[in-house]
Length: 348
Image 1 (spheres, rainbow, N blue to C red):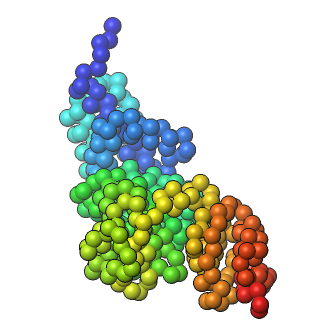
Image 2 (cartoon, rainbow, N blue to C red; image 1 turned 180 degrees about the vertical axis):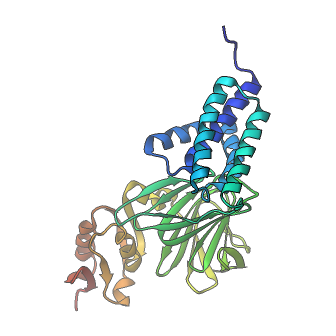
């Protein structure tokens, strides 16, 4: 009869599971079922997440350079070895040695590029949303027509929002800051939840949990000068541009300034559920968001039309309802122009 698991055996099983998840994630994105199992395992016990983050810090360093067939073979062998190890009940030290040896050999096969990682692009098409789990346990939720470029290094995690909007659930790792660059602004966090949106008018950052710094971008993703605060701040940020939860920061492009206001968090995340909610929103910004779901692009006829304010809740997947609503309630009309629909003043 087998007795209860000892703490040592429990730790060994946890480390083995963490190693297996690291290797599976390094092979590519998880399917829906595996991702659900992975998230459930992380949530099951805080020690599981700690074990995964510790293991990912080692294994993730070579994950994306290991495209060499020899490295792929080593990974598959490591997975098989982990399965054998469950039966043989390796000691924690033995498992650590096996992982370290596998990484050292893989690094050698990859040409010594131990700390390098190939950039990765996450993107969605028009009308598409998706959620992606990164190798460190961070999660990225992408709005329609969005592109995020990911570059993980040994001492930092760098992402760049090239277009659209994304929400980031950041795995805690104080030793590797998590930065998101958008145009000429950069957001830095270590473990938190926030969204970044890139619009023609500027960059919008909404913080849901934790703290983030928002600065001018220096170089690819470096922190530059703090932003000059305009308007009424109301305690949502300090002089260093460190945002606090429940606030949003809007920073115009090419200007080292920002306005911070309280925000309705559920409303700001309605897009994840397929809704677009506008409250006193400039029509130009509303149209940008609708275009992430519109098979036929909308375009603002002139600056005066773009400045008209719009309120309402619209289905992200029904651009026609948005057009019908704004043309019925606002002094604008829709004009078909080639492959686009132009919104112009009703008197034009």
